[in-house]
Length: 270
Image (cartoon, rainbow, N blue to C red; front, top):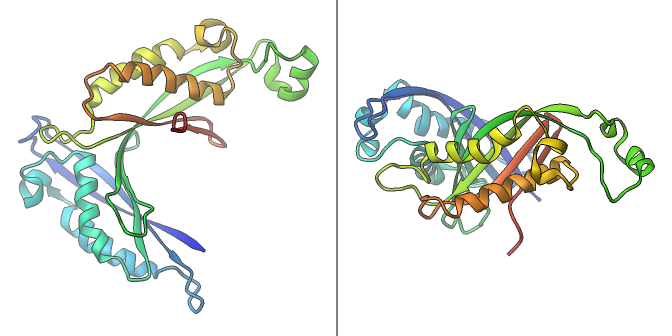
């Protein structure tokens, strides 16, 4: 039985903007996920102190308090985007793992709303999948009511969520793209363009609206969070397919209706 252990480290670093024209700094958070079998003697996959030692030497000591495009030689010729930083740290950490554990995921948060992830579940440690995620939020009302069910059935299935005047949520959504970073910008896709598309396709049509009555996609579709997630995917997939994103692809849509209700969609199975 394989168990994953996740450990985080934090560091602060800046950038002169020599490659991007955007100077500034961030308080970063990096998480390593290490997988392995439980040792029958210790009851652990790996000793957390061993993971901490790797993160301290390969991440914190190297980057904390540094100007990335000035003080780190490997980042002087490539933009220090979350995508590039995540790949850089993956390459530094993967060979330093304790022999009983293997690195299967690395996530680097530039902020609470923007992060990059590399993940590989292969025992052979093949080329990991690189993704970048942006988080957005909107507030909306909905009433859970299916036109294919009777009023009694709707009341039985959806309970208080079937109240005729509806109820509201502060939704959080995560939009994840996969691909290879552009050599010039260091981004999988232009984040400003993604922000614009999400604003036009999701936030503006949904925010402070009653989904049942104000959003055409739900005029005959029960606006459960499952359906909200799928509708957002379809709207973004159609728009992104015609946007100048290069090889970037929509990988995942996540909708967080409440801290306890979270929905993910990865598109139709091939």
